[in-house]
Length: 267
Image (cartoon, rainbow, N blue to C red; front, side, top):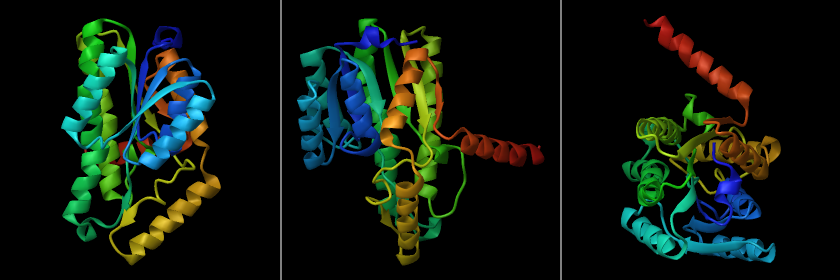
């Protein structure tokens, strides 16, 4: 359990903070009394976030950096720790989408997505966690997977593979921390539909997959939860020490049961 009384005044790292869930997580961390370091590749979006958080009385710095750049992220971490000390909260939210069938996906697009969605989570955790562990202070790591990290579907293979990887990485990190009796918790978030720009900002393998991308973007705008609701669920889980956050439990349950039946039918 990581009470925000233990985190107040300490540093919160939020990646992909320029919009959507990341923006909501950054604002909410500030509202809870943390000093926020917002990381994103989009400088304009970061500027808008900094302006908004600052006007609400919060403390926020911004770093324009790609989580896929391990050396760049290591420098961001070193600079932040020199100024603020170890991060108390590390939120791995940055991620991108791509739509297309496996054989129609260009290798460059495949690698780019995995570099951001999977390697980026590793890079950020690896850069910030050692200083927190060495301090002995309580802290928490949050990883944003997706209900896609439990499902199987057409035209989203790269994204789904990446979100399976993030979900399992969170489970493995929890095991590593448990083995060492570290005073650091882990929460993995599996959002279903949320009103974000993830599909609007995505690319596609071909025209038909781009039509699918547009349909998914419209679905999120129509039916998705607000990002602030994901932030609320996430930080409630951090405070209560919960590992799993399912924004749409029925969707998660259906996916798990379907996979379980398929696995068991082959044993």
